[in-house]
Image (cartoon, rainbow, N blue to C red; front, side, top):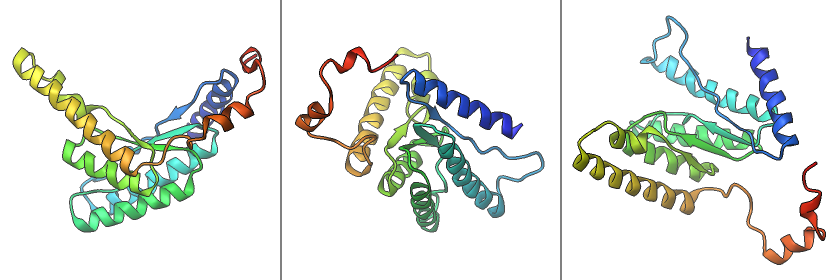
Length: 191
């Protein structure tokens, strides 16, 4: 089964490259039947599994990784270990990577984004940690409050990313970019 998934990713990478589309892959770590996610041993295995999955996906020709946070932020020691794991992740991949929210509470996710960005992440692709409250209520007044809160959260995460994250692509002066483009480049950029 795993080799079929690897083949699928390699094939998608080739197809996306041929179409000039970026391929973002999201490897996810799942507990196996009988494993206890509340044990320290499982938590350590999860972190190592996240790192191994990122390295493997990186080797398959993807353009960006959307990864689970490799660690826990519930204690100062957990934050230190997570920062070390994020640094290991960054050192082991050569494509941009971002953190997914996995539905954790917003305060924990904000801490995760900052730790990951300081280690080399390019930011976040965010879901439930931002908008969960906005879609979980039908009361118009409460929904509007939750939408405003989601906007504020997104602004705050973007500020963290801009301050600490690595750009997806390095910035280049416009004169340099224009010098690298041949005349009428747009006629031949894609077959």
